Amino acid sequence: MLGIAKLLMSNPKLVVLDEPSNGLSPKFVKSIINILDDL
Image 1: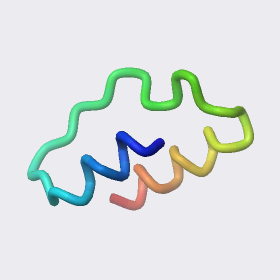
Image 2: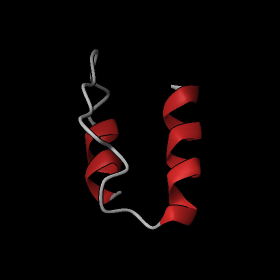
Image 3: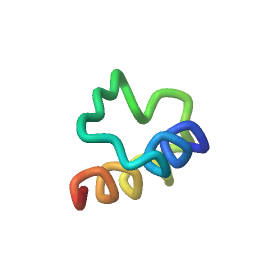
Image 4: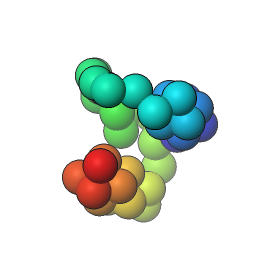
C-alpha cells in the first residue's frame, strides 16, 4: 500500500499495476480498488 501511495505522489501520466492487492489484508482490498477506480 505504501508503494502505491509513493507512486501516486509523483503524479504519473500512466500507472500499470500488476496485482495491486497482492499481499494486502482482505479488508483493505476493496478500499484500494475503490481508490484506484476514482483515479
